[in-house]
Structure formats: structure tokens, C-alpha cells
Length: 531
Image (cartoon, rainbow, N blue to C red; front, side, top):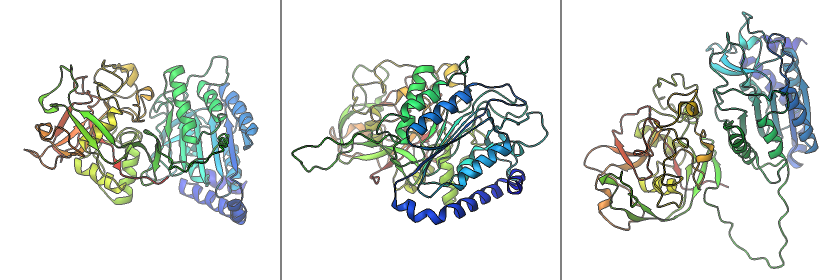
């Protein structure tokens, strides 16, 4: 127990070092065998309900039992633990980490209480999400880090080929310790999918009879569907939970590989084999390994750009409507670039960080769109991803997704419940006051898999602003505006403070490129992504 005692009282860096050393010693000898053989799937399932100093819980135990049984049936090597104290939780995690081999697929699940707060793993006292063992005492003068385990420590310790970290721990607790409702989220990590059972800042609602909750029930169902990779599994979980409860589980895809818990069905054998190049479907998603964000495929084609006939809110600079051709397909971030992705960019490049916003002063809402960025900041980020800002034509083409005559992504009637705008009911924005997480409106993504093409934040595009930009060629190809009568650059899509007039797909906005504000962000375009 001496090693565990050291781990329990050490700082986070020491804990990570110990886990890393343990992993190397236990797994290096089996590297060759694992690399040559099939990929192992491993799972650690924790359910805590019998808390000493907090109200007891029944659902986490039901969750853990049901999920563990499902994973075992899927031939996943599964380790389970219930009602674990901090020492027992550390020991279980330590033993599990020591058994992992390089290339393994690792699934970690915790159900119980959790909280966000400053904990004491490191000198900077950074905010963390914490998993609470059964002997956690909210009245204790000890730091959270001396009583609980950070989600980041779990990800740091489980060295594997692909990691799936699932946290069902947004339950109300610990008024004295809590710095915010629910949990705060995690930055994107390569080959690691992180999923929370609720939206950031939201709370779990357990069934009154202690049965399996909706999130875990839908997870169990999706895991058993053939041919789904981790991103697709949790995409379905998100949609189904949203449909059942109106809540939106937090998912950070992280760029996991195409591994399966149930293999895809075998291809149908044909008597005639015709060689053809596999086509990429519009809206197909891939992860850009540069920034670990998902990008949607946008095919080449033509569309009608500008003021839709019958739209009484059109401004002069949206006319005349014209047919625009885009000769090359491209990939575009399916969400606005997030706080966590931009933070990673600044750490890797030394680029300056954006100034704080009133509602996100410490950038703790990591999956909100980044704001307070200038046009050049946005272009610098996109160049770092091996891309650029989309042109105004590329932006509108992707946002319309084949719906040339729509005023809004979903049709001609504005629906205040489908985007973050000045008209959004407070109960649908809560607990946030300005921006919301980038996948908050799960049912409002367009036909090409793009979220928030209107609302949340305006998005910088490449073009200079010219009020007469549409007055020239009636059928241009790949148009872009190099210069305008002033210095302004175009932004599109409207923001959280705008009404439906500014949120139409054809609406144009322009602003000083050197200034960033709390209503402007961006998304990036890249010409190609590897398969």
C-alpha cells in the first residue's frame, strides 16, 4: 500500500508519472504480440452509490451492472467496481492501467457524484472535473484533489490506442465545494472520445425507482448496433437522449479511429465486380488530426446565392441573386472552432490568447465557440490546420446544404428553439447567458452535418466587404472579394444577440477585421483530409 499512499498525497504530475512508469513496465514486453494480433478491447466500469457523507444513490449501481453485462456480452474484457473509496478507486485504476497494452481500445465509465472546482493537484489550482469516491466529505477542510480523482488524471493514466471516457456524474451535490453547476468539460485529446451524460453545467436526473438512466440505457443500445465507430455511437446517444428528455449530453469526439464493438455486416458478394472509386458522401465527417475537430465534406457544385424571392427583410447588398459555381469539393469544421481547440493552437504556436469574455472569463466553457478573435487571428488558426477561412460563397453554399430557397437552414419560418439568438427562451439557454456549447442544438444541424450555421456567433469569412459584390458576373465561379471600398471583412450567420432578420442564410454582416468581440468566431475550410 506504500505506492498507493504516495499516489494519494502527491500532486498530479507525480501521479501521472507513476501511472506512466507502471504502464511502460507492464506492457512493453507484450508490444510485439499485441501489434501483430487483434486489437483488445478493455473496460473499467465504476458505479458509486453508497456515499458516507452525501445522499445515497441507486441509479449508478444499476448503470454499472447493466453496462458491464453488455460489454462482457460483446467480448470486451471488463473490470467492474462498485462503492469504491478513494484508496480503492485509485488502486482499481492503477491495476487496470498496468494491464493495458499499446494499441488496446479502452472504455472507462464512472457513474456517481461529480463536481467541478479547483482541487490542488498542481500549484496553479486549475479548474478540474472530479469523480467522487464514496468517502468524499464536502465538509472536510482538505482540498478536493486529496479526496477525489480528476477526469484528466484518468485520461492521463490510461495509455492506449483508443480511449473512450464516459462520465455519468452530473448530480447535485456539495454546495460548499461547487464552483459551478454540473461539470465543465475537457479539451480535445487525440484518439480520445470524452462523453458526459449531460450538457456542460447541467444536472443528471435519476429515475425515481433507481433504474438505469436514459443516457446509459441509450449507450447500451447504441453499443450493440453493428458497424458503429465510437463517434457514431455517441452521436446516436446524443440524438436519442435529446429526443427523450430534451437534454444534450456533452461529447468531445477527439478523433478516435474506426473501431467497432459490433463489426459491420459483411459485404454482399456480387458475381460481377465493377471497379469504381469510393465516393465521399456530402456531410461525411472526418477528424483533422491537426486540431482534432470534426470536418464535414462539402461536394463541388452550384447554388443560388443571395436574397431569396419573397424575403422582405433582404438588404441591398444581398442582391441580385446569382448562380455561383464552386469547382472543388472541400471540408469545413462542422462546428464553430471551440475554446479548447483554439487554446491548443495558442499552446503549440505561441499565438496570443483571446481576451476574456464576461460570461467565460477563464475560458472554462471549453466547448463553446471561441470569440474575441480578429479576422487575422481566425485566418492564422485556419492556416495552422492546413486550410483557410471559407469565402463568403463557400460559407453560404455549405450553410444552405442544397436548400437554395430556404430563408433559414430548416425552412422559411424562424424557430427560436433551433438556434442561439435573442429570441431563444431563457430555459433553453440556461445555465449560459451568451454563447452555448457548439452542439447544443442537436436537432438543428443542416443536411451536410453543420451545427450553428446561424446563431451562437457570427463567423469570419475570407472576403473583404463590398456592398456591390453581387452586381458583377451573374454566374461566377469560385468568387472571392479581394478588396472593398473600406477595410471591413465579411462575417456571416448572425449571433446570440441577433434577431431573425440577421439570422437569415443570405444576411451579410461586416466589421473591422482588427477587432474581435464576444459575438464573433469562425470555422475553417481545408481542401483535403486523409482517410
